[in-house]
Image 1 (cartoon, chains in turn brown, cyan):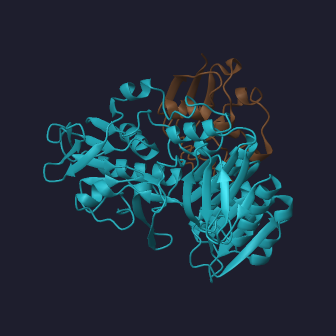
Image 2 (spheres, chains in turn orange, red):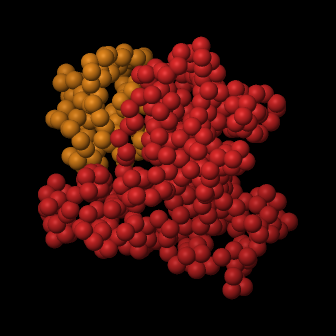
Image 3 (cartoon, each protein chain N blue to C red):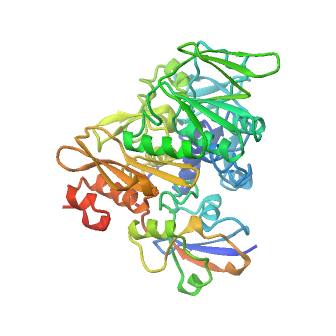
Length: 106
Length: 416
């Protein structure tokens, strides 16, 4: 069971157990980590599950889809390491993943 | 957070009636904000809180399961000290005693009450829905029953070409059923979208083999001895179908509030803090009519984003915290491979501007007012137009129409 650490914009860390097959978004929602709104529940429709992925992990995530890329180009406060957490599926290879949650999803 | 009174003075805590996404989110938001008192979450359905949007889409297609649409794992409620009461129906609200009473007689006294009773499927008064085993699509039980009726080659008649009807049509086609949609208006999504969008979606559904009957109403439905439905429509035509799904809108579940004397007007009236006409009672989600300051009017929004926003408002108000910033209303729908995203409300619209090409399956329609500000955007497979449109709406930006029409110019460069 991989663990994932969510860092909030004020630096607070929450480390939670995740289930392989869930997404980084749904894991946050299920464990009540605040700051990931996920309005659309994972349909890649809203860009309210935006996170910054720690550099060490970027290369280990899957390809980014055109749809997600299109969303990220126009989401707020994006950076080179931005991803939509609903599009990151959890695998054993992501043990220890660290993501930072932006101050606002809007 | 600033709790106005010591927990000892307000010992009953928060009672939330309705365990859909609005009510369940409010409970979670209260704990996120550090609310220390008891929280009771009372739901009529037997299932623990789950997400409804997938029921007409991914869930029907088997792309997700009952478990994956669960809103939280079962352990969540105990971990967060949220008392979950399922299969429990609230009979009445006693504002004087500050208490809700269940049909089984149990009483839940409250310091703050949150009404999150949602909406129910509208029924056709002149048709015996139960006797003729008509389907509707609101709950996981509805969806389970509907799915069980679909099989390759079976005939499905869908009454109503709104979101539910069209999403169900797309899913039923994907499962091999023969689908006809009957609609009272002359086009699909007539109540919620512009003509260009209706034309696109009608064409898309027809390409996938769906038949449409427009400008027609259902007069009566009977069930023949072999279980097949005989549907009479105005003009004397008669149709037969193995399965009939009714998707003709939703009615807010406001009776609990209305009977207790709270102000209602096709929805429980609330303010920008989700507070009703009783200062200790909040209402959130599909059952409410709420102010939207961007448009200067009250609106009844049936959407998950609205439910989540109002859940945050109520939690903030109860905890004495700052209210969240008002959001631009938005909606989405998935049909076949098409993603529709709508932001804003199409009111006070002076002109429509189309960006992109419907023939290519990627376009957006911008609704502008007479000051060239974006009031609403309808985006088909066009995430940048949706996201940037939502920001333009929130910022009340004036746009340059020539640049907006030209899809070679980035959406980042259309504001004046």
